[in-house]
Amino acid sequence: MAVIWSIAKTELRAYFDSAIAYVCIGAFLGGSALVFYTILFLQGQVSMRALFMPSLISPSALLALLIPILTIRLVAEEKRTGTIELLTTFPIRDSEVVLGKFLGALGLILAALLMTLAFTFTVATLGHLDWGPVFTGYLGLILFATALTALGVMCSTLSESQIVAAVIGVFLALGLYFVDFLHVLLPSGLGSFVQTISISHHLSDLSRGVIDTRDVLYYLSVTAIALLLAERSLARSHA
Amino acid sequence: MDGSSDALIEAHGLSKNYGTTQAVRDVSFRVSRGEVVGFLGPNGAGKTTTMKILTGFLRPTAGHAVLGGVDVAEDPLAAQAQLGYLPEGAPLYDEMMVVDFLRYVAELRGVAPGDRASRMRTVSERCGIVDVLGKDIVQLSKGYRQRVALAQAMLHDPDLLILDEPTSGLDPNQIIEIRQLIKDLGREKTIILSTHILPEVQATCNRILIINDGQLVADDSPEALTGQGAGAVIKLELKPASDSVTGDQVRSLLAEQPGVRAVDLLATEGDGVLRFSIRGKGSVDPREALFAAAVANQWTLLEMHRERGSLEDTFRRLTRGEAS
Image (cartoon, rainbow over the protein chains, first blue to last red):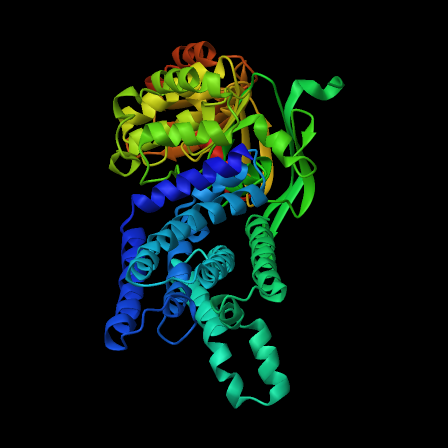
């Protein structure tokens, strides 16, 4: 446990020492603000839905792009520089390495999500805010970000080239995100399958204030499976 | 602890294949507590692979490694807890400050929180990195990097140090400093270090393993491998009293001298100068007898010196195939 915490802390600190974290958080907040205030001022709507609802240009779409970029260095960088050899010859488990790195990155991403509370308070001061959907919306975004972070860690273990790992990660994340938009074009069986696996589809209900256990389970399963595969992949890379 | 607990490292038939290439083939050896073992071999011979197997970083295709009685594959964490490892090229977290890096390693190594500060101080002093503790690792010179990597390996005060090319890329002064440090450490710890720099093992090790093409080809003390026990080699240059004496005649006379095992006529030069290479028997030094023979036969002795058999010769002989 102490080891996981120690790795998480170190990763989080490394993020704040690196430009990539500031660039990504800046892009996320800037993009989210743009979406939010555009709707606020152009449409004259005071709504939190824009923050939570998946769409082509939305905070969650930004996360699907930025989280793979942020998480890709976690293991790939250690493979490239060779420090992975230190880490894996310390008397610690591969699972501890994976969990520590996952939690470190998640800490950063949750901090970025926390900053969007500024929008919530804007809405709250401008008019009556229904806190129910805000709560479920944030729950949804947190679960969504958690699953994406786990997928990012998994992709990070796949290659020592950060570019290769990043390309795989971004394609996987954006693919899982945008595949949902294709379901109308597909025959119904395939369409509903696509919705089931889509990482954005499960955000819709939560963004409307509905907590469906299937959505929660989806995100938790994706997280668990991705972390498990990450651990396997890490173990295999030094076998 | 069982009876074999005196061996800190036991390698039993280690093999490692990468695809169809066999990087290491059936390598077995034991290292006892307190030994400083040099692991020699040409680049690509399998030194690093063997060390990576010992540290649990790589899993062997066949065979098993045992550290302090613990099988590395069965209980990697318990095996790894006993060792300090300096990987080849001293990979470190470049963006970290040295002191933060050491603290991180102490945490991951499970050094008790109360002992961390004192352990960090001890190894920093030992490795001479006190002055750079506040620097980012990326700013360090190669010599300092290597020391930080060594400090990292010693942080939890392990009995066993596995050092992969601890002096590679260093300048001569730095090499001497690191060697001295390793020598000092060798008084209290068991060390296995790899290198392809031969004087290094002669300077620091009391046992040498030579690996070639994935196989162990020698396992002995530096003295034995430098050929001092196998008889000295004398280079002799002389000029017979008259030109009518042939090189062969001189050779057979030389071969009759006590303490001489074999004589080779290396060259006959234009002015009648003959050059020989003479191999002595065991530990006998045949030089006095050779001198006496020269006086008795009225040869003019131009040069005579004993060559210390070099580790280099042994190394070349063992790693270049049996032909040479």
